[in-house]
Amino acid sequence: MLTIFLVTTPFLFYFYKFAPKGEEEWKTIFGTITSGGFDNIQIYLHALVTKLTFVLLTGIWFLTSKNWWRYAILIPFTMFLFQLSGVINFKISYIDEFDFWYSLPIIIPILVLLIYVSYIARKKSINNEDELKKEVDDEIKKLLSDDL
Image (tube, rainbow, N blue to C red; front, side, top):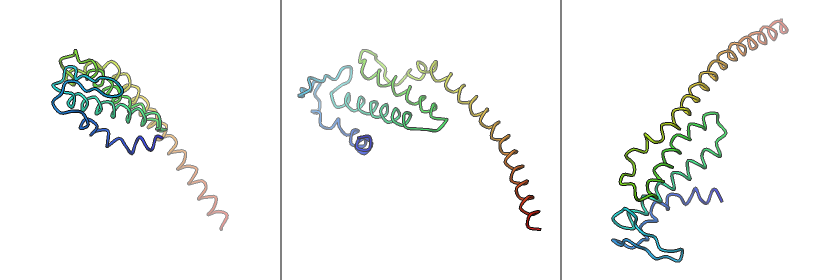
């Protein structure tokens, strides 16, 4: 199911072309879709599907990633969520202008945490590297002394 979704995501970007051109309303079997604050339904659907696709892709990436830095994915995820809410809430007269400033309270703690984790990981890797070098040297000396 996940693979099918990932394969079909490029086609989601062109979903807006199915909407009638120049219309402000589109009656479908799922209900009526209005253009909201956009000029027409195609522009609205293009903005909506683009933001929704990015939210879904970064969400899947975050949930399936096993790396320690996966929390960095939350930064673009947060930005896309704010942008998606701006598209859905058509009463907002700006969509992508100030979303970054609204997401800063969420992004800054994540960045601080990532910097701290990378510092700790680097510090431990240096210590582990020194220990590993010592173990390798000891093993080589042991092997060389056994051969002689």
